[in-house]
Length: 325
Image (cartoon, rainbow, N blue to C red):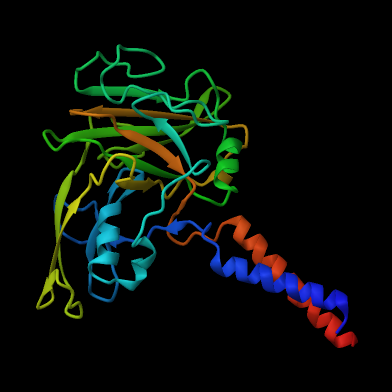
């Protein structure tokens, strides 16, 4: 066989094997729909592993959808739902996979501005930290401080404009009091706000400062699935206790705004974030951006697609050589 053909086949084989075994592809949040629970619970969203089975795993808050990480992991590990098998183990987020926006200290973010600190409520007011009085159980912060972060910066972090930013929230609350919060994301052009995406409980795509979302520290979730014979199900009646505070350094919630499409903006447009919290009782909460989580229906990462392309190109070349032989 031609030596060049052998080299092409070997390269294509190695790349294909790398694609098959690569761990760089992000986890994908499952699709969710309304649980249909009625008045007062209209914002609750359910995962449907099969027809007629609805399991509460997420909730909508104005422009955002928020998922409970522990719910997804329990459904994968304790109840055997194959569609969530990738969530059985949550990988550690390493360097380059998160940008901390708000934290208990001024965490270094590499090429991005440092995180806005003070979420432990133990610092005196400052414009680059908590803007409320020390030890008042509240937090108000803005990010970034004195430095612009552009849409192009965010696109580079995510790996392309077709990827939707996902936020991770590490809950540190000790359950002594409820933690309530809201926030906003603004896109600005030439000093003017061209879009606002709000995280609160009034559905109007506007930031309502008095509308707060409770970060549920513990929730009991019940559903019916006649086909599930796991230990948590009795005659099809299933139940799990979801602890949304799995430990410091681990994300408890993932959230994204479905309408936040980066292709709608100029690369030079500037991003602004605000976070407000009430009920702080210990430690420090942490809000970050991550590129390790995909939203429902999102395509594989560009790096994976590029590798697949190389493999296919190699195989195509092999076919051409075969025809000439």
